Image (tube, rainbow, N blue to C red; front, top):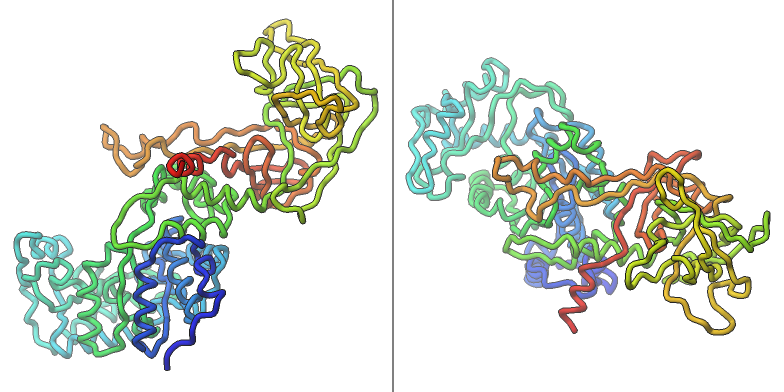
Length: 577
């Protein structure tokens, strides 16, 4: 029976992880054609199959949005399956983090499975292939297997053990399973074609001996199936209709299909698409692990990391990630996306939803000499000008304020419109003030205090006589300020292609030594005192910030998510104009 027609909501690209102007998605086109033809009975069943050997990163988000999004759009199902056939690298910690990340992105699996759940069936199928003469036990070492495989221009050589009898192969494979042989001494290999132009078809290894405890099935097994034998059969067991994977598996598809055909089981359709790559971003699990192990970052969830846990801690939103993944589209050609496009999606979402607040990161004291001693005004401030329903808040104003050091110059350069001697500026939500003088540190000559006067008639920032000022600056009342820590994050890498090794052959040389600056004495408006981890704000004129889990009732901690300037949006506007 054909699948039901998608409803209006499911047809919305935004609902499938895209955007209203999402580019063409060839995988979606295939699914549409399959539904129209009645293939698979009009059924759509996908899966997201990560190996739990590390934390998910932004590259995985594209696959998550694609697999879960297609299932959601067409009324199908999407499983989360842990492809856990390598016990030496997989851990429960990674399993738990993956499930957390998938749900954070806004998707709930229709089923949660482990490839290791299928080890009994995989073993039975391996025995079936041996009985059919399609598999054999090989005594070559790993190095010898590589030597025998040949090259792209030369065919491989057959293993001297390739023509063992079926009876001997069955006996040896059973003894492998029973733990009679040491690691690495024997493998089970498929008997395909050592002369194939596709190296993956040259008698690939199906099972290896590993006396290692498994995170999910414990010590039941000492032989473990290889990925190529595990993956397709797991898809078949779960009745996956569209097995969507990245382009590096295109050369593996003939082997994927070979196993399915030889076993005579349900045939999923493998479809390959382009990986997500970003400038200034490293997406190699091995190298990300090295950053963690060598202490370059504080952990997998360091806000400089491209892991989903890292960008979540930095303050990126799942809505922005889904929008970004939809905008970059799905193709058959690997390329690299500009980091600015992701940042544009993040700013766009935060601009619409983040509450506003004022914070001063590098405080300079301002005394308003003609403001009454001991008086406090409560000034109304807008919580989000993009969202009227966000309402307003009251911000205290008093005689002594803090402003940013960069918002004052004793000797202003040409074109400087902020505060300077004799210059009038507007305080955000407050009054017009004019600088009348400064106090300096006798030892260093640095300005420590700026003296000003204010015009009481300009409450709200507008002068009754209509006079204009060219600059508005933010501030915090010194008496009411909350002390906070602000962590200013920048790109972790200096180069657009951080995978590239420098002249010394060390990719680590591309790490940015100034990717984190900690401001320990920031001054925050009082509304930021009791904040919850994960809450997002725009610090006016400074950027978007997120409350870090390290925050305490005594001292809130904020991570800079992203600055206010949107280079990508500016570039797009220039191109269109």
